[in-house]
Amino acid sequence: MLAVSGLTLLLVSAPTSLALFVNSPAWGALNTTVGGRLVQGIPFARSCFPLVSNDTGGNFDEQECDAVKSDYLDHFLLASKLGGYMNTQWQTCQRTGAECLLDSTNPANAEADSPPRVCSQGSIPEFGIHVASAKDVLAGVNFSKEHGIPLVIKNSGHDFKGRSSGPGTLALWMSNLNSIEQKPHFVPTGCSSRQAKNAVTVGAGVSFSDLVTFADEQNLTIPSGGDLTVGAAGGFVQGGGHSILSNVFGLAADRVLEFEVVTPRGDHLVANGCQNTDLFFALRGGGGGTFGIVMKMTTEVFPSMAINAVFASFDPTVGDNRLEFLRFVTDQSLEFAKQGWGTYIIPRIGILLANPTLSPTAANASVATLRTFMTTNLTGTFTMTVEPNYKTFFDKYIGALVHVPVGIPMTPSSRLVPVEYFETASKRAELVSTLATLFDSVESSIVFGTTPFLFGPEHDETSVSPAWRNSLWHVNVANAWNFNTTVAGVALKYSSLTSAVNPLRDLTRGSGAYQNEADVYEPNHEASFWGKHYPRLLAIKQKYDPEHILDCWQCVGWLGPSNSRYKCYI
Ligand SMILES: Cc1cc2nc3c(=O)[nH]c(=O)nc-3n(C[C@H](O)[C@H](O)[C@H](O)COP(=O)(O)OP(=O)(O)OC[C@H]3O[C@@H](n4cnc5c(N)ncnc54)[C@H](O)[C@@H]3O)c2cc1C
Ligand SMILES: *[C@@H]1O[C@H](CO)[C@@H](O)[C@H](O)[C@H]1NC(C)=O
Ligand SMILES: *[C@@H]1O[C@H](CO)[C@@H](O)[C@H](O)[C@H]1NC(C)=O
Ligand SMILES: *[C@@H]1O[C@H](CO)[C@@H](O)[C@H](O)[C@H]1NC(C)=O
Ligand SMILES: *[C@@H]1O[C@H](CO)[C@@H](O)[C@H](O)[C@H]1NC(C)=O
Ligand SMILES: *[C@@H]1O[C@H](CO)[C@@H](O)[C@H](O)[C@H]1NC(C)=O
Ligand SMILES: *[C@@H]1O[C@H](CO)[C@@H](O)[C@H](O)[C@H]1NC(C)=O
Ligand SMILES: *[C@@H]1O[C@H](CO)[C@@H](O)[C@H](O)[C@H]1NC(C)=O
Image (tube, rainbow, N blue to C red; front, side, top):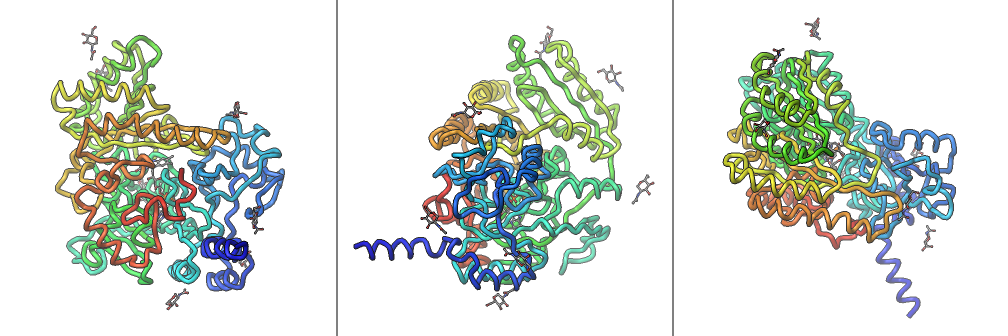
């Protein structure tokens, strides 16, 4: 009896328990194949903990801990480490509570890292290949196939749904691939030179911080995400990629001209509009971590341009200010979009608008009503400037005013709101009433007026949810917690968020959500993230990854929540 259960235990744990392989010849051989670039995955705050579980590497180190504590909430430090994940629950095993986290409301709080608290490996990959070439990727793919070790692709660690970490995994860590090349007359391989475009080719690890600076130096405009440490060529673009300029220039997925990819089948390919077009379609919205490992991306870029910028705020604690503000922005949004404005609306703070197309005079005229409303009706603030280029705009407005917290356990939910809800007074009233209730029942909210409305539906060659093409808003709400929230408490954070969004889902039936900022427990996720594109995406997944080497939560063709990869999800 004992022997039988012991054997069973061994069989069950053998394929996924990396502990059995540590120091084994197999890992040593892999390290040799990848030129010594195999690194151990160490929990981000490991150095602060005297006590550690037996499966966790790294050392207690007071000096290093001081650095971690002072920059615990810093996106650059998090992005620089294999064990750094912005939404820190993805460093942990949520289901068991095994973690290595500090108090995100006060990282200096010794209660989090002092005994009896123990630092655990959680969902931090056991090892990562710090990828330098396609050969390194192939070595990782081969190793995963041979040893049954699940593979994850880790770039910046921004993923909101845990798709770049996992217990007992080997990571392909892309951050070293940071080349940026200018290609003023880029012709995709196999295409005709009539299709030449002004482009830039970036390595898989390039961050928006580097890319926006490069664009500025070269007098180019390259729209970015709202956080500069998000990767330009990883999950962001492969899942869609919205920016405050998307209304005019489309989603990041719309602007891609070519990907260089290693497929789980072992092929090293170029996918664009003229060859491997199925893979090209899938990588433009089908989601990261699913179809292949992107090594490089080439994207269309634009000349440097001035950006009209407006920031207006109000006091949310006064009278009916919040509701009046919501009503006003809902009434005005269609007109804003038609005039070329992209918006970030923060229901408890105010609104940021950016416009790359109008002249300063026309821009000023088009926000006259907003100016009066914000300053007179709400007795708030209104600032307008014309910024010489995107980088100055970004630094002065998004960088300084929009703060999406990182270094904390947090989870979002998303809904794309179709244009029709802005077209008639009765639809707008329904939307306002649904949103007012929603915003009061979640901890934070932001509305992105970043859909490709002016860019237009005629460019629909990507695999993002078709809902992006007829929507005006991507509504995003979130809940957060802390290191000592109980497992039941965390479960409630997720489930209450999902429930809070249900009335908006019901109101906008048939629409969808933005997969990269979506609910971890999105109902009917295939329809919501991809709509009519799903069957085609599934066929492409089966073609390029028949052995299912890549898999991630609610991704195309995923293995489902009961697969052992997901044993740390609640
Ligand atoms: C603070 C913050 C701000 C954000 N702002 C925006 C925003 O303004 N607009 C927006 O659209 N999104 C935004 N996002 C969401 C963002 O798009 C996603 O988090 C996205 O998944 C990040 O991709 P990454 O490659 O940088 O991160 P990772 O977490 O490293 O990777 C994310 C996913 O992509 C896969 N992946 C990474 N690299 C590759 C590769 N080379 N080949 C194949 N798959 C790969 C991973 O396996 C994983 O599935 C934001 C997120 C955060 C946390
Ligand atoms: C891989 O090899 C390099 C160079 O020999 C070494 O520095 C590194 O520690 C090894 N990695 C692991 C995980 O042992
Ligand atoms: C670690 O501890 C657990 C629980 O005490 C035990 O089952 C496991 O065998 C240990 N692993 C190693 C590698 O020592
Ligand atoms: C991966 O495996 C394939 C097929 O077995 C082999 O041809 C190739 O050389 C391997 N590549 C690496 C980098 O290990
Ligand atoms: C960018 O524009 C400025 C101002 O017009 C010019 O001085 C500079 O040479 C340009 N830089 C590049 C790389 O084209
Ligand atoms: C912008 O318009 C307002 C009226 O809405 C006007 O008072 C202001 O002078 C204008 N500013 C510029 C720079 O034209
Ligand atoms: C702003 O206040 C004026 C004067 O009270 C009022 O007529 C107008 O309807 C208000 N505007 C909005 C959008 O509520
Ligand atoms: C979590 O820790 C914080 C900070 O020390 C403390 O204020 C709070 O009461 C703790 N919460 C729980 C549920 O233990």
